[in-house]
Image (cartoon, rainbow, N blue to C red):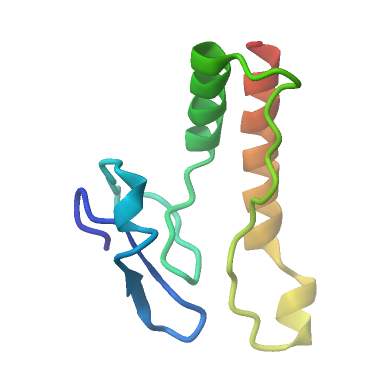
Length: 107
């Protein structure tokens, strides 16, 4: 679990990543044990993408809109069958895309 106010991540090799980029974020990081987790221990928080896009649009009104250039999740796949039946990742994308659609509908 990530402590309040200190950003960190777990690499694909299981090493904790902190400092540098994570310290430069200048955000208060909060966590909730009810959130689903990726295999890198990142919280799955689709509404966060919506709130962030709405905030950026309202505050900065970027010309040309907002481009989401990366959004994905790390999921361990032990074999080909588990990779083919990747329910976690499908739900991840469905929920994030639905929240992004909501942000678009809100302007």
